[in-house]
Image (cartoon, rainbow, N blue to C red; front, side):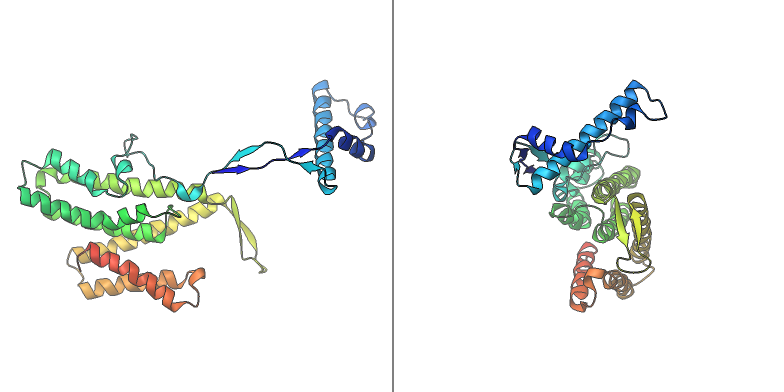
Amino acid sequence: MKVQGNRYINNPEMIKNKVEKKTTVPQNIISEDDVKISDSARKLVETARDKVSDFQAMHFSSINGEIKEIPAEYKCENLFKLDLKAASISGEQSAFEGCLENQSEVFGKWLDENASEYLTEDEMKDLKEKINTMTADMDSLNAKEGYRGTSYESVFLLSASEAGLRKVNEMYVPEQLQAGFSDMIDEYVHFNDSARNSIMERMTPDYMVVGIGSKTESYKYKSEIISDETAFYANEKKEISGICNQFLNGKTDQKLFCNEMKDRLNDYYGSRYELRNQPEAVESRVNNMLSKLQHMYAL
């Protein structure tokens, strides 16, 4: 995205002279100071004085209508159109980077290269369909415009997707290939995690004011913001993965699983400032995420 900004000063020397008459700094600040300074330091002082004079000339001319346009071009990044990019665990380009909106293709290609001699055509087709079901909601999220950094939705869906893929590996992938397929799942999770974390870091402000208008108002700097966000999402991932694994391993039934997830989603969305006193909006968000989860696990 390009922003055009064009300004110049009409007859800047005249303006500068006007300002210097009012702002000239006595030379004895340099020449008659009790402390002797080097020539290089003297030049720095003189340069600083010139910069101040130039700035004052700009300010003086702006308030007197002397500013006109000059060609100038500034480039700034559109942070809402950043691509999801991340290296693989080994440091090379990730295979998932080129298939953001159809990540099951990467798994399918791996199966074609490694599992053909172990699976019939129908078994291969069925396995690919199961993988696609587990990754489809992450694909849809990756296809959306707007903020693409780490979010509660991305952590929720990726955690559920990972748990589902590992269960698919355990139940349907030939035993000889399970270690390799597990590595593919690791790469899938690593790519989606790292790419979104990178965007989150780039879009996090240098600082934010906490408790605006209260007696406890304070600053929260970028490193602290990112640290808090990372810790929060890591805990959510652990909890969501645990609930999913309990269900997928038959330790909880479908009703309890859905209720646990619904309660967790209600707690999160109900605490969001932008959704305060909006129960219908909270319910809509919760139901949307539950429907994605139900589709993923064929509930």
